[in-house]
Image 1 (cartoon, rainbow, N blue to C red):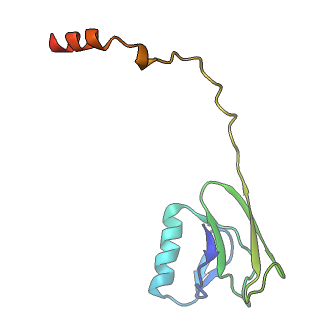
Image 2: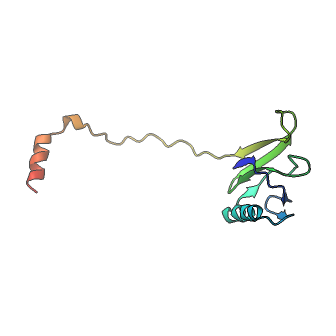
Image 3: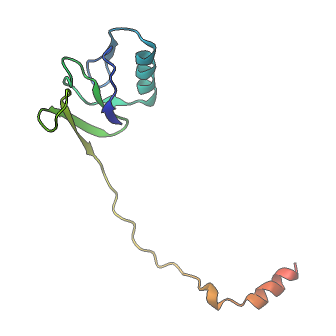
Length: 116
């Protein structure tokens, strides 16, 4: 999940290490939810002033984020996030039998079902 979460009361020290500078209900709820999901935050440098407000949260994946200036006009730094994704090879086409229902003997099928 990537976005501007606008929670200046949270000091992101490391990927999982956070400190609440002010204990607000929304900051506490957010930090608890991130911890409960096992998510990590990958933005390590300030995105507005000296705060990390724009986050890239992920669980169970290799994610790397960088901040950059000048990609667009904003009062925030741009966050460029890279996701390392492993994709399995496509499944091979199987040679399974395909039934052609247009050639079915529906009269015999009805007779069989009526006999039940």
